[in-house]
Amino acid sequence: MKSFRRQSASVNAGSMADIAFLLLIFFLVTTTISADKGILRQLPRVCDTPDCTADIPERNLLQVSMNEKQQIMVEDNIVELTKIKALVETFIDNNGSDTCDYCEGEQNLESSDHPKKAVISLSHDALTKYNLFISVQDEITKAYYDLRERYAKKTFNKTPDQLSKHELKIVKKAYPFIVSEIMVKRSL
Image (cartoon, rainbow, N blue to C red; front, side):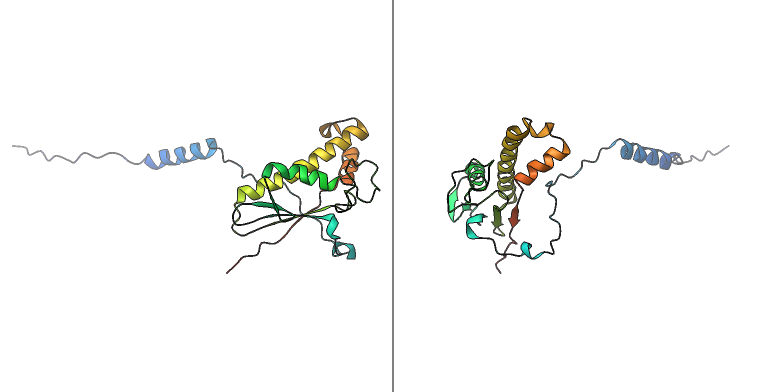
């Protein structure tokens, strides 16, 4: 009598590696990797001239700071985020020295002399939330954009997106974006 030895059932796994490799390639090719978003800021050029380290008169400096309680202060007065834009515009466009023919400011003697001399000093505490810091930066940027837009309409009768490169350079020169960010002081 014949004895039958049963062989254990097995699966041929020879092509498994090929299938896994093809799936890996498929997912790598079809997956989209989202690009990181950041702040679109251009770092200032290195300045070797003495006027870069010269003292700024107090009236030409607007101090905007944020504390650990997430409060925004402009010149040591607590303000709401929505008021930052108007305060910055008023400060930059003040025309305190009466030498700016395109400014529409109040000519307050305690505020900035000229848009080219106005400096926004932005500082924050180490515990300030990132979202608040970015929101304040956005409000300052909006103020500069609105001033530049008004100047472009008045001078060239165009919106900023219609300006040529040369005209845009003139607009940026009239209202230069001068923001000084103070290094964070960390308490131990």
